[in-house]
Length: 154
Image (cartoon, rainbow, N blue to C red; front, side, top):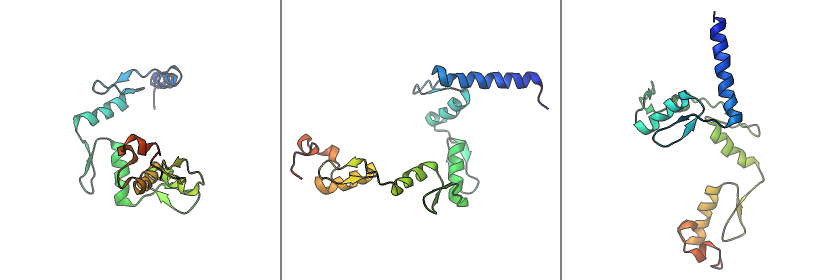
């Protein structure tokens, strides 16, 4: 059983970490890239990004990862687990980001307007692919300024 002293310390530490939400205090800073963290554990995990060390190997295929959370996501490729179901259809996804991307399919909102014609797209990448029709295969950002501004007459 946990002693009251340890319980008090745990509660106090949790409160201190929580207070950082309100104060904006991020005291643990990466010496390589200056990314800041509210706790020391995420900083320790982040440091693997710079070291190239991949201490979390997959027991099934041997592929190694810099963070344990990346390994957990990777394991789903072997297990087929898809814990993020879409509430609009029967599809499920292995990562929350894939579910979020998929949810756009159910939305009528198309916020990304083509810079050359009246078409709109749900996804910025779909717009970029479409704009190549107007730019001869180049991304709009690779076009001369006049073409990017829509002054080309397309």
